[in-house]
Image (tube, rainbow over all chains, first blue to last red; front, top):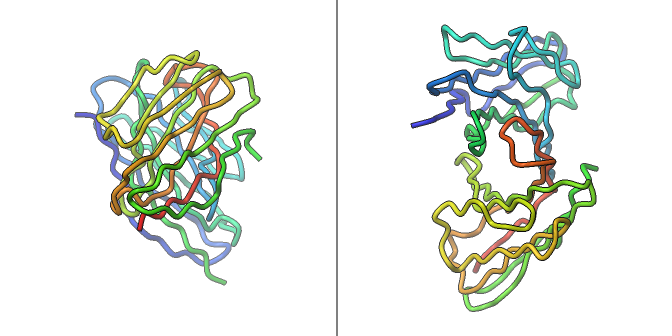
Amino acid sequence: AQSVTQPDIHITVSEGASLELRCNYSYGATPYLFWYVQSPGQGLQLLLKYFSGDTLVQGIKGFEAEFKRSQSSFNLRKPSVHWSDAAEYFCAVGEGNTPLVFGKGTRLSVIA
Amino acid sequence: ETGVTQTPRHLVMGMTNKKSLKCEQHLGHNAMYWYKQSAKKPLELMFVYSLEERVENNSVPSRFSPECPNSSHLFLHLHTLQPEDSALYLCASSLNLATNEKLFFGSGTQLSVL
């Protein structure tokens, strides 16, 4: 069965520090991969997506993610976190025309 | 502002009430979705509509009844809900049904069932 795992429920980082949020998936073929962000009281907003080609994709707000087929991973990174990045982050995976499967999310807290 | 508007933002209802959630988009999208977001659970896809036809119904209890009168509006009718139905209900839209299409989400309706 298709599945998406975000191993970290909650991460706290200092402002200005680097960030990596993990995402692992279980799919048969090459999936479409997404990261969405949800600020408190808001819906989800797309940060970036990977379909094919260069395995390092750039997104909005200074985020990037790298697709590693050998590790079935699509980790999200940011070199320097800002306080406004505090939010919930969701990894999502899909293939063909099937609906996206979302992970449980990772809540990011940013401290001064 | 994503272009997807949900009303109301908050709703408290008793188990015997009937209420409706509304979603509206004027992005020219052809696909619309209802998701349920509960604490510590993955986002659950409930219903999918494409060109006003329901194409996905993920074993959702009949106490949830969707309606898509046109490509811009989506409703979720609620009746005789249970306390475990308390959650954030998110509406989303996309240009079409393809998996690689970007989803545009509304801010959600926070539902509490007493």
